[in-house]
Amino acid sequence: MNPNSLANLEKGKFKKGQITNPKGRPKNRVPAYREKLMGPEKAKQFQGISREEYFSWYETLLAMDLDELKALNEDATVPVFVKTYARAMVADMNAGRTTTVDKMMDKINNRSEQNRAKDGSSVDLAYDAGTAEATEAIQKRIKCKKEYIVKLLKKQGKYTAELSMQATVTAQLMVRTEMLAEEIFSEGHKVINVEISREGHSRESISPKEKLYIDLTTHVQKALRALGMNTDSKDRKTDNDSFADFMNEFKNDSDD
Image 1 (cartoon, rainbow, N blue to C red):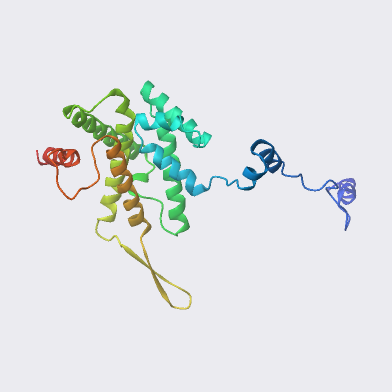
Image 2 (image 1 turned 45 degrees about the horizontal axis):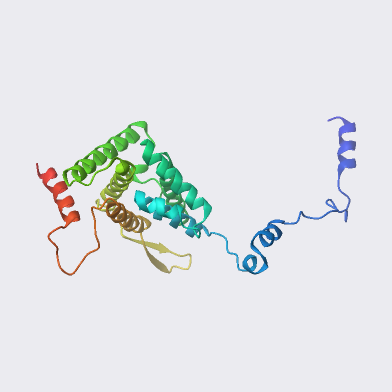
């Protein structure tokens, strides 16, 4: 190495006690802007959107129908980012796209994978196979499920063009739920995980996949409700049980 280079390195070293940033760390100016815009009292009570609330809005938006999305845009108390997604979803519906929904579903699924990874469990679920063949098979399965949902809606006189995106979301959720069910109900799956500490103590916990399955089934119910195919259970069975008819159609089709 060139001796001159070593000398330059020595010259460039910070001396002990030397202040490298005399002006100090840049001040966060956001609180001042917030106080200016909102006023002191409101700014003092300000609370940001938590990560949990962020994803809860995603799940809520995915379960809404077209009228609910439009009504949400008129509510002055709803955060701007939520309205932005709602407007994008309405625009996609009118154009027959699922771009916004696909992005939201990807973020929710990535979050689930990260949570499972934190728990120390595998993130390689059956429907996460990375091969092109597996991806194509999944997309075909979703397409078939959507076509059948649309068929049933038309048969019941409930289908409109605006429901195309909601039917896609429902099909995606149903396929993912079915594929996860195939895994957790297969031979060898353990509902309870047992971990042994270094001290020899055992700790039992429910498999993250079981929790994910319950979460997905809840989303399926919400998506079906948004399509008018599911209603809250009542003590008395009515003559117009749309969800029962919907499930019977699936059962009869399978029997054929």
